[in-house]
Image (cartoon, rainbow over all chains, first blue to last red; front, side, top):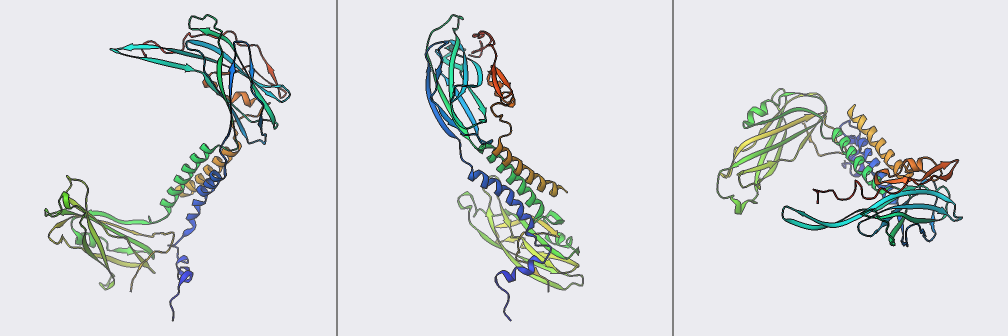
Length: 346
Length: 78
């Protein structure tokens, strides 16, 4: 009889409670935000360079269109370049196509330049407060214009000054706040990752211990395990006992074979599994040791079983490394999002 | 319990972020009082008037500008 292939070989897996892809749907939320961000349009800008000819002598911009749909946000940003060492009061009026006043705002600005001396050092400075912005949603679509005027243009000695002030006006219109969408994407994705971390590959920890005695640790795995998926993860550290793996030769890989046996309550071996890992030299010059991580092994238990996991790992490897410690992480009731390769008990 | 809370938080944060980004609820519409209340007062903008029945009514200027007093580079900093 042919073995099932394709989707058919996955279907029995999904009937098991240990395989539950449902929580993957949490990723739809950050995807939703990502699609919103991708479909949003950036702000459209319109720039004007105006010059306020003299105090109390206003200047009006050319008409510019704004669209009112309840969502579009318009921003008027003003950047003035006043003469050095002056202060002023700038008045901004927003007018519609008929010249009706829609908004009127004032902003006091100043600019000061000079030299500084401190502890034998010196330099110049040019500081100012000359920019401001207004944000609003238009009530009706149409053409608008901005009228700017300056009054109280004074010198640093509070004497009236008559000078022109160049002003840059930027009209921006945006239908969505892309910065907020990007922030939402980060938060949403982080929360989704936390949900996935809580849901998958964690299970119930039955044994998590570090020891230099492999057999003693193996004996501690004797317990009654429920039906379902179990995971066993082994990592260890070997001490370097030779100079062959010095700083000039740190990337050599040496295979290490580990044998895993599952023994039931009556002492019968129910499963044998051989794993191969590779010693990898740590980058640190001071820490002369090798790290070794074996791939995780999964066991599918169809019923409650009294089991022990016997681990055989060499104490020394080719006379170049000696086992320093051994870390075992054994879990049951593990849930995975998709079928994983498992060891079956005979 | 914590997982359910996180799932609800993910859904709520995603919805709130998209809704806020698309509708900009903090920005007022011309003619509404909220237009001037949500201004950038921190940058020193003062609205000269307000809306009455949706129509802008200007008020008189606040007075002469206060010049350099209390502003500009402080002695000791430069």
